[in-house]
Length: 455
Image (cartoon, rainbow, N blue to C red; front, side):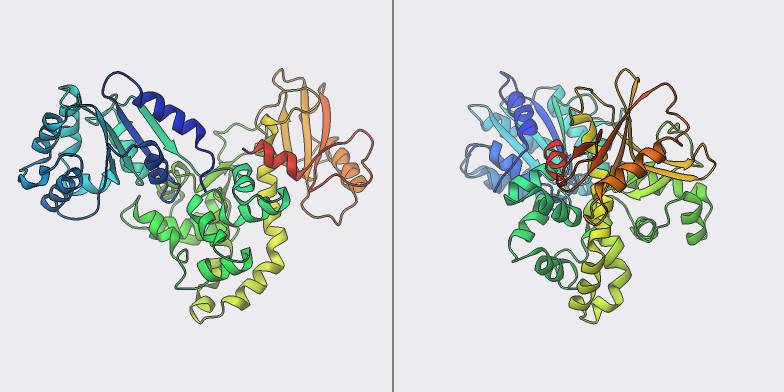
């Protein structure tokens, strides 16, 4: 089942509809559906080639064979280099087609001259009879080849499409499930379509996690290592940082202390993990992003968060075949874990919600010392576009606390915030569902509202 990617299909389709040959780059994290998307767009008369780690000569030979169904006998010729192959393909075509090279970074590893050859092909209009699509899962390599001003291919793309994981709203549509169930599933598997397919093949989330993620022979048991393999020479530092963040070490100083390294040595690997959208740096509302003393690091991807929270700490037991025992422990902590993802989804939903007809900026958490000099934390804070109104929100995943009590506590905390003077305050409760009794003056946002806003 294919859902979403509407925007991406439109951009690629519009580019391919031009009356000249175009150059398109498509990249993003492995298993996010790049290849499936391209195959939906390409026609039977187009050429789709998947690169691998073979030697250059073998790759050229395989590439030529891939063209045979379109141009009979194309592979009977021996091509001494990529430049000759691309020129020969153009000469042999009598109408414009699209040539798509998937996992292009694999070709570049064995043929580092390839970006320069591609530059020559594009600049000299050697591909006038074929559009060119380059696709890759190595986000760093793809970005360095198309976004780095020193790269031969810089500035030559007609479209650059970054395929990101999908949002919780599309999870709900894919599984045709309720909002609460969608949030629970999304909290474990995130927005990667391939993970959704694996989940759909099993009877339940418990069965899927135990089979695919907690079993050492499961497809996803070593998934982070495979993802890191695409992006870095060694995954030791990235794995270590994510392990510590998953254990609750959220400050740079804590992470550095545990790794017995100067904090300055962690800047580069942390930036890489942030660029890959695996972790994020969080600062309190109204505090400058440049502030490092009040910054916290969190795992931003739900799947990676689940993996480093529950799988990594239990790898020894899982290696002994005790997956059912580990899942039983996880299931007892699952509501608490989901509540953290729920908070983040609530913050993400705020700009898309129409609350009292007011448009709000992206929401943040706030923590610090209140006016009464006591520690204080607010789940959700956002200001209106004209800065006159503040949204003050509390996100609760549990049904145990009475809404009246939650609302009363939220208003009491808001009175101690140091930045609310001369602003109108809107108090919002983010709850699973509408309670039987809604507190007066409270605005209720439900799981259904949040899921729809995250689409």
